[in-house]
Image (cartoon, rainbow, N blue to C red):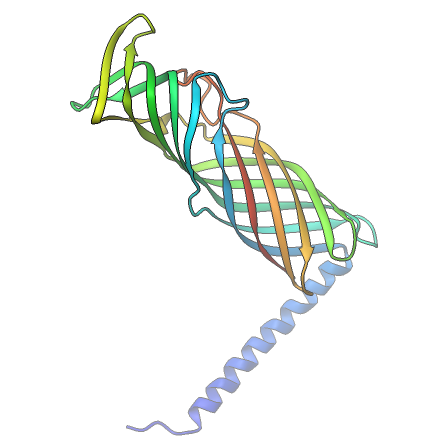
Length: 261
């Protein structure tokens, strides 16, 4: 049966009226917050970087390849400005982010725990090729100070605290040999297509922290472009993990867009 032609305009009118009333109800709250020095924004971006030891240890002889992976971040934050000119402020945010990479390296006497074909483990010192995949997802709480340089530019600096929700640190070794249990131990060779896998995911630390520094440019009234550099200050592995003898830190640059209310 054909529906009356007036239903569609009526539905649009009702829907538009409801949305307009909802917008009117929200607007006084946003205006009230702005008058009291509060500002809110949503951000979305991509992260590029890596998880690496600093400085580069002697065990790593050559970095043969680095492949950044698609790492997305989503953030909501609130900023409190402390002066009328809005030059100094403090931002508290909640960010869902990924930190990913894949690398290939040549190493010598690199601490390793590989998985045999029968499912058992063999630990020792590896010399040869190593391919590593890192894919970690975090819920992060940054707390940053803001300084507005001009009407369009501001810079930020402060600590962040992260909780690992899902992680992966795994890979395989190839074209080399494993000495077990140390440099003077028995030798196991891997040549040609022969590889052995490893997985240190269960040894990843749940809580992480570091520093974040960044800048933001106001492109339009509500649209911002930003870049944040995060630098981890504690090892991604648990303190009792001793297979890899050096600490590894996540260092990532996040670039994206933000919408300010």
